[in-house]
Structure formats: C-alpha cells, structure tokens
Image (cartoon, rainbow, N blue to C red; front, side, top):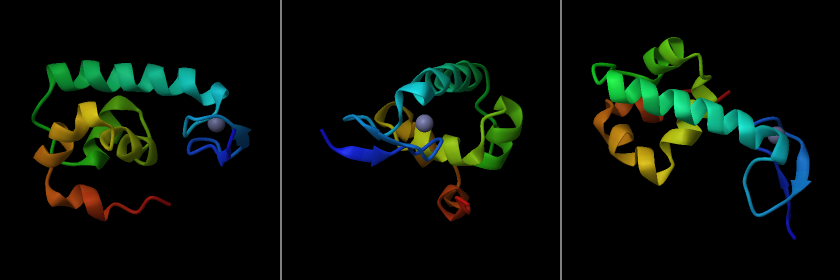
Length: 87
Ligand SMILES: [Zn+2]
C-alpha cells in the first residue's frame, strides 16, 4: 500500500485515502455540518463566509468542495474560491 501524507493533519500513513484514519471521522463531521448548512443557506458568496458560518477551516472547505458531491456548489461560488490562499 502506498504511503501518503494526510491532507488534514500532515502525518504519514498507509492507505488508499487522502486522509489518515484519525482524521476521517473529523472530516465526516465537518462534511455533515457543511451539507446541513448548505441545505439551509444558499446566499453565501465566498469560502471565507462559509468558513466563518460553519466553523470549518478554509483549507478543509476547499478540499471538500473538490469532492464530486459539492462540485455544483463550488461552481456556483464566485471565481474568488480559486484564489484563496491554502496556507
Ligand atoms: Zn490526519
């Protein structure tokens, strides 16, 4: 199995996922929070705003928005989404 660096916490692990086992549950919680938020709100204009309202870091939001299920939302956001500094 390939050794990867976790996109969330930066630790090295062996898995087919992009994040380590410790972070998967955290990701699931945040993705659920994001889904719930998006079901109730559709008037946000930036990832920064989403981050403030959901408590999810912009870095993680950008990662989630690359997932297939969120692509339609990502394309709805202004092009500013792609200019966000991931550091
Ligand atoms: Zn991790």
